[in-house]
View (cartoon, one colour):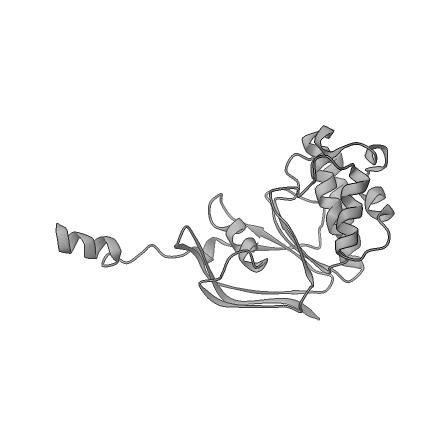
Length: 210
């Protein structure tokens, strides 16, 4: 079953096209990893899919209220504890139980610690645990393993595989191996936007004032 369909999508950064003609589908139980050099537009593409910025062209189709997005920020309330942060998000998404998220991301020993007192890796684990309380089937993740050590990367990979096994889907931009052998890879290099034509804005400016 197709959960997310992207057709001929073009996206911009700073008003300039960075990717064009991106097309793919993501079905239940599938993971897709976006690859490409730094600056090619992975973050821009994910932000567009999450509805944080408009597309230049193309379409994104998915059922309403099905996506959970995790960007570079962990989205934590510094003065709340680990447990209180997860309870806050669980209440937003009407999820009754936060215990599975605490266990899956190895946060039990930190449950009563304030978020501001956590290390960068611990904050990242807490930020990722939010995904587990959203109840949403499509996870869209931008460099989810930043600040994580090898053990925590493995922990996160296990959580993603459990999500896939339960019928969810995951779209991730990452340069590292998450230990998810069934994940497919989409290289964004072929979708890099072409540079502006010589006769575009700069050409017109030079002709008028050169």
